[in-house]
Length: 244
Image 1 (cartoon, helix red, strand yellow):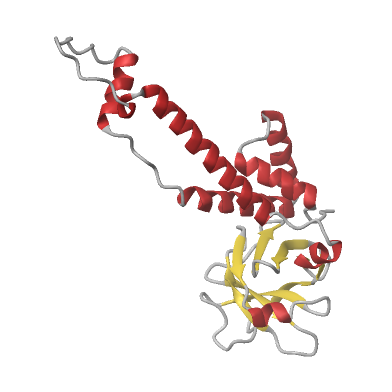
Image 2: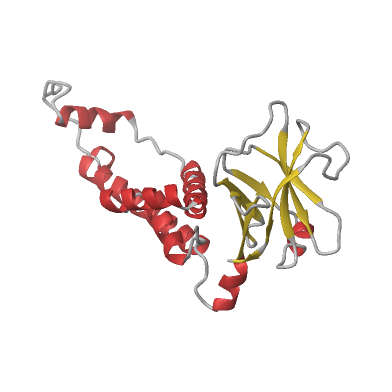
């Protein structure tokens, strides 16, 4: 039986994405993710977050003379012949200075990353906020066999759907996810690949109707989804939504 990813799993996934876990800890988390689709989805989310942070860091190229000095120190380029009146060395040519500048930039980047991680981590107080931040659903067939799990992140208005097994869907057909609020018509959430993790953005109107009285359902539709806005094919799996 799969259990939702808890705060410890969130922290381990964040540390995995940052690359601070040991080799043994990384293997342990990878094995846990293979066995638990919710942990796998959490790990995927953290890797995507860290990748976006890295994209925002712009490289700074030192002037050519610094690289020439580095190459000379490493023996890659022979020393230039000495002249009778060598040019006085300046702070701009100081290799040690550039090493400290590079170290300082790296530490600043790590500090910025740490601030972002703390900001993105679920709040540990008060407990009620954390409990309401996530909702989950096991989307299963009528015989109880789970096909997908869905994790809703209310604060980021997103949902991740992860396959538990590889469903058999007829060629030329697509799977579409639906939200069915209590005593209301199904609301289309989107077409998704049945055998791969899928991420969906949720509007405020959709989030407002995602509660313990609602159900998620998957139907088999034509490519591109239902042409009517309501399920037209068989509903192959359903699952109640509950707080994580």
